[in-house]
Amino acid sequence: PAARPAAARQDARPAAALRANSRLMSAPQSAICAESSNFAIFLTARLTDGAGPSLRRSLAMLPSLTADLAAGYREPALVSALSVGAEAWPALFGRRTPALLAPFEALADGPRRAPTTAADLFLHIHSPRHDINFLLAREVMAGFGSHVTLVEEVHGFRHLGGRDLGGFVDGTENPKGTERAAVALVGDEDPDFAGGSYVSLQRYVHNLAKWTTLPVPEQEAVIGRTKETDQELADEVKPPTAHIARVVIEESGQELEILRHSMPYGDTAECGLYFVAYGASPLPFRKMLDRMVKRDAAGHYDHLLDFTRPVTGASFFTPSLALLRSLAG
Image (cartoon, rainbow, N blue to C red; front, side, top):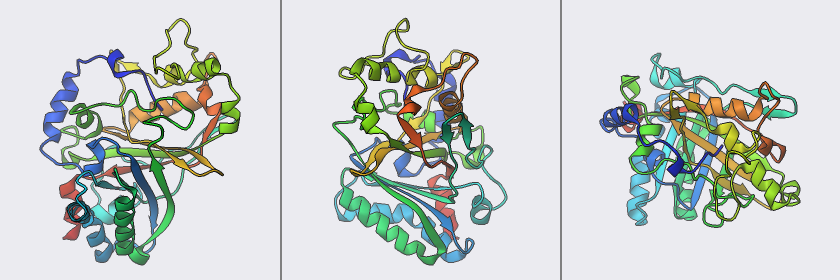
């Protein structure tokens, strides 16, 4: 999902600012608040034999492995995050769980589906260099050994300066600067997990052959923005089925926000968008997805789903650096 340009949002976020101060007290894992880079690797995996000491130590080593490779290859922008699903959380961290951590809930309405995918771990790596991302991913997976089974590995890349494969600017709405922490990180509302983040992911497969036959004005009506200049369409001409019209949600005068780390991926046979949303709560993402998939009382849904479809879906919690490192014992 995307939304309207940042200039169109309200700047007054007193509650978010207060939460941001608390979040600074507990450092997040490095991939969350860092600006998205040119390349990313996304890995999902299942635990195969519980959560013994060896696996726990391997998970705890991720921040130091990342820092060592970043220093060794002089690439300070190399960042990473390790997230854990609801089913695996108690085995790794004990009975106390983040308040809103739950498995991804599948959605369906007519031909539109948002499926769920079984996964216990999500590894997110990004930097300006694919080779360094690859080296870190290999080292991490080697450390996991037989304790995990890979579900899916996807390599993302920046396309045409930040455009989706369909040709539109992607992520115009994304929070900037210190606002990223305010949107993404848990604070005093769940103090045991401050500095952590809820993350939801979906892999979308695009039907580019169908999309490219659509005239540009009709593409713009599907998205809700102009293709060349990335201007939001005026309300009087923007259809209620436009992507922006479906995912821009205001509650109590504030627009719901997520921190996106989505990237194009694929090859000549299959390609699309790997969608990643971090948040202080998983609820904004779920509300956006509901409005995309499900028809409202007038029969409106997100017409972008006529040209792309999600084939995976999973939810996790990304613990703070301190909590992740505590796994080492």
